[in-house]
View 1 (cartoon, rainbow, N blue to C red):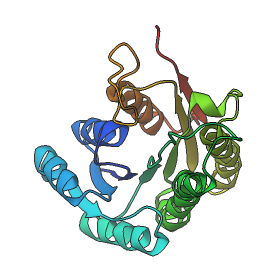
View 2: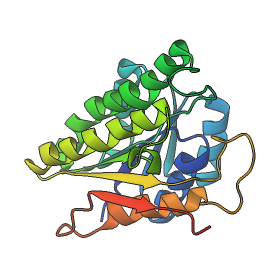
View 3: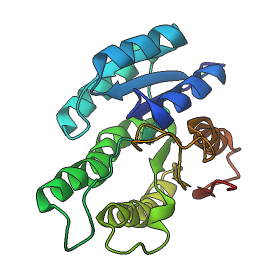
View 4: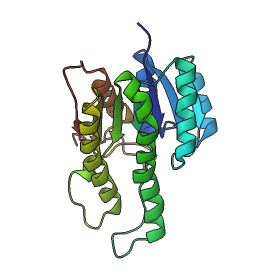
Amino acid sequence: MTAKTLFITGASSGIGAATARAAAKSGWNVGLFARSADDLKTLAQDIGDRALALPGDATDGAVQADALATLADRFGGVDAAFANAGRGTSQGGAEAGDPDDWQAMIDLNVMALLRTVHAALPHLRRRKGHMVLTGSAAGRRHIAGSVYGATKWFVHGFGGNLAEEMHEWGGRCTIVAPGMVDTPFFDEAKPDKLQPEDVAAAVMHALDAPARNDVREIFLMPAS
């Protein structure tokens, strides 16, 4: 059986890197997309022949489209894409926050995700493929003044709409929504919270689910 291929944004560290390792271990080819060329090169070397480093900025749709085309050419097609790139903000709530910082966050958390979807769908349609989006517990509840949380509410709303669209041609869309994860997203380590490997396992559960099981959302929280 020909190996399937997964495109991952935000692949250089944290959830993206853990998912790349988990997917390759499960027999998938992986396209690693992020701005950090050096980190991607190191990760690709660690994974081996199943990985292709694709440096680029997720906010640039044309760059993502070129990366997906390169990945499809290398491995014969793209079966799934994981729109994982995102960021938070160190600013306060609605009154104390910085609108310029909000704009940069929205450009990545919302528009870059849409650009990933837009660039990936032509490839996924050919394979009746799978789109995975990184949501968040912050997109499932209200947090005082959180603009970051609002970007994740968008992801959850859009992901449901996208699942309906992809269902029309046999594709699937899953939102993976973790609570606090111990990643470079936070300034201090969170060893008692979810680990990137926990989220990667959730992604792989959705991707490997049998055709009869359309996994629309996985919500995981730290036990403590």
